[in-house]
Length: 286
Image (cartoon, rainbow, N blue to C red; front, side):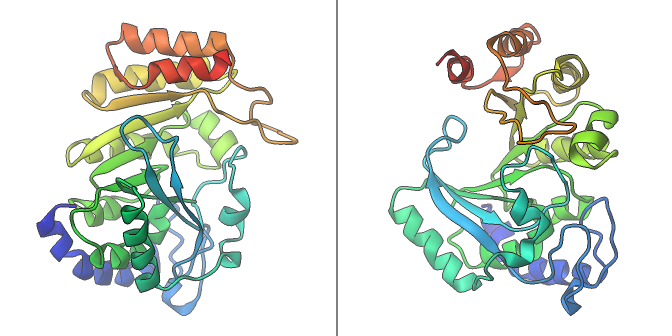
């Protein structure tokens, strides 16, 4: 965290609290008063609810071991989400005291964590609690914003200087797929804007899970856009898409070696800053 930004984290938390009174933190713009217990699409009020925290050793290269802290609630409905129950019913997650969580983070740092990894769900819908948390932490802690990047401009402004690394999921490359798979038809434009803004203020790693049947419609448009509009960002191509049981719109198969080779070859041809490409290919070679 930038020390100057860290000093303002408490003030920013108060600004976020005001935004909860008529919530517009994401493009859904629900307008509910979360300070009165009302909930919109994400299902989150003004409390802080975490459903998992752990040391993690399989994040992108250079980020391990990472202390992952999962916040309940999300503004997307990805059919293939691995933690869907905590997104659809976030109030079932345990509420947590901010001071207790800050202490746990300090403990994980002493155990070897080299960063704090904020994810969920979606951290943006929990920005109020996260800002309270960051205000209590040592500013030397490296903070990863692990996000679907589907949030309003105000969230990006509240984060500037506090997030050191943006681990940005870019799931779909067109509005038709994003509406079908994520439940958000305006997803692509919002994510592009937020990646560009993040790239102007911090280090960005764009992560794309290669999905079977979505090479032409999603993978290729995303990679070409990165080439022209987001120069310098690092790219992580992941082979660990897991098809959901009873998939309706989501792909029903795992990513195959052929798809991964197409993805890696195109990234190289475009001159993108591809990371852990050996891991990417080997994941499917096992």
